[in-house]
Image 1 (cartoon, chains in turn purple, green):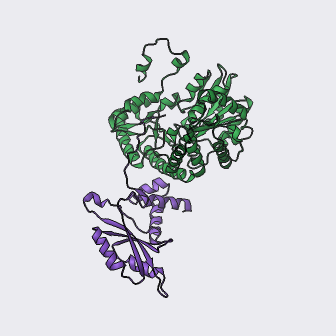
Image 2 (cartoon, rainbow over the protein chains, first blue to last red):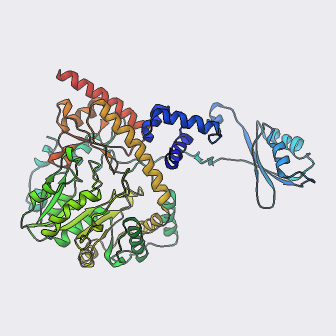
Length: 164
Length: 399
């Protein structure tokens, strides 16, 4: 399959992973077999890494606290950023880990049940790591957009129902 | 039927004869039935369901913040006209100077100006049908006489040289081409356009080519007739940002034509419109400079809906040509034995789906309905289910 169509398949699946292959085939002008084979292959190759569901936990009363934490890292002999980054990434409380440019080195996101929860986690699990020179914790007060998804539901102006 | 109310209104003699002679828009009548109802899935909308891309809206906001709230030159901002020349050069490989471009308040204004600039009283303009509802009234208001050319389903609603030549008289002044077409979705490829040029040249016709859906073609790239041999001197291109960049409400379009014609159009424009709104012109500049990615994204989405929807219609038994452009499907509903107004009205009352009767776009649109697929895939799927139920019921009723 050509690159253009493959890309389009990925674009559609990225936003709507639940569309059945029969429907994808019609949407993209492919055969059902082509769709299934390509998706299988893309999954195997790790191009499609995961299918994710975005849940508004607040809506069911499960409140979480998020914090973005800047970490200053002192590299030890022979081990690079990867070693410490992987170590931190292992904690389930840690939602994302990025090596970044600027005046700190790693930027991580942590989720906990309360501010205390998050603060203890940082104090007990992250700060004591010997490569960590310092941490700055920013608690998230409100999320407006995440992973390309706008989270505020402004009312969309309505179109006229019939226009030429 | 639907128009009775309006035509029966008492005539006081205050309204000019030419305005009285223009029939009310078939779409407008249907609109009154649908307005104010929330339970309806509307396939009757002739504009994108996407909001104007944020970068364009943001550019408009920024221009307001900076205080760009003045008039522009009548012809429109030089930067915008230059960008339009660059764009058509890139897209169609044809060179125009910014003096050949006039920025207008939507394509609607450009279409009106074109008619008024070229027509003498009683001269005829050939209009392919089915087509957009404004051409004929614009021609009449400019003192001309519209002459329909009926295109056929078997030609996939393209204009053939026979249909064109059949209607040419000594009074014929111009011919309108509107491809990709609203309501049929038909396109005219280069080879089809080439078949028309002999007659156009022989009778020295002006071509008014409405290419507002030119960016929305799905398998073949759009060809403008102006690129064909000898056509540049004959052609007035009408185009705009409404459909390609989802900017309908900003009312911004343009005409490209030989300078003599642009000057004449500008003469009318300066006394009637003065200039297109500067905020919209600023948005259009941003659209041309940075709008490609968003446009492609919207086009891909339309294409996916097109495939799903057209296939769905054909499966239901409503024969539908595959539209090559725009965002309309134009299925035949003759299998149901209903006329297009009947079909549309009953579909609306029984299944709460609004589509526009095909005869609103000219006599030859009878037997069809126009369905816009500029609506979400979810809604299109529900609409298909409802149309299927409706068609099944009407087929049962017949047997």
